[in-house]
Length: 411
Image 1 (cartoon, helix red, strand yellow):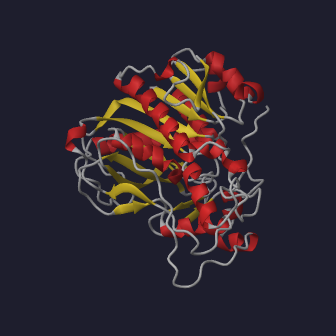
Image 2 (cartoon, one colour):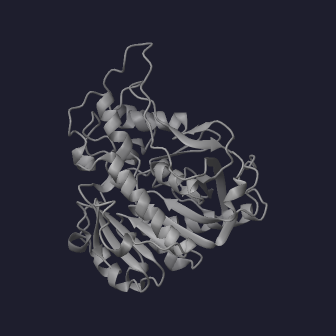
Image 3 (spheres, one colour):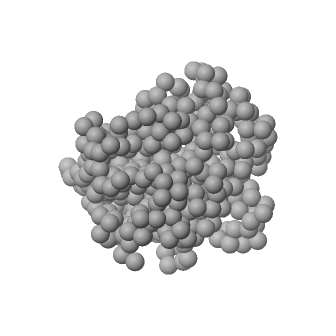
């Protein structure tokens, strides 16, 4: 198999981080191990406020609410946990259309895990502040949103669920409910409400199989069903936003993911017909779905350096086995992480650290961050609008004049 996107990589490689070390690769043992591997430069002078990174605002008509859920699957054990007999635990961020007024704006990452992520990638303490999101903490569900289609987002290997925040917020502002899932073991670090840190497996250890990720997202969909029926699956029964009961249209469910999350999306559709449409953002595909294919809509978006139909034999095998609606597009001048929030945040970090122009190109290509965001948002939203809401679009007829960065490849 010839795949060029499976290596670990730190999101700030080339910005003072230790090149070639991914987030989980650095955080795999403990915070002490991160301190031993990375030696950040000195931070700003004492008393100088750190410039805060900024995420693009969602463009839909609804404000966005968010609630974080700690879910425990007592039917599965977690062989990567410190106690391999313990049940599988997940953290999920649920984004949804919200009422105009609600709780405080939520952070992109919790403080402790956010600081670890920065330190593990060589960012000086206090050099930057991680962004706030545009989502309000447990804001009431928007009455005018009706019953919303449901989407699940799976991040890539070595990533955290926060990497898909800008896309999740965009979809929520347009009337979707989006559950972003961390996959412990694959995620760089998962911070639980009681302060526990679950670090990614160390380099050289077995990776979390796509089958386990698939079970994760199916379990999350089960728990969303509980919420829609009035239940509260959070492990500590923390308060849920008002109005979620009866708000989910579980007859219209989609799934999307980046990198290994794209593989998870395809695998979940193969295993569970509740998922009726799926989008893969530059991820190789694994498991029986490659040969078995799918009879439901699939959108494949690749980075410019992927060249999937030349170098990725999983896409070459998977594509002809797609029997339903299908499209493939390439985001010109992009790289693998261009489909994540890192496309937005990394150039800001580079500027704040005084890095020279072009320092982010090895990781992100030369595409403008705002254009990468606009094109990805447009295509992902239009795909789910078409297949979950029946909203016709000409966007998939070929290369769009409005988004020429997204080059049409195959129908």
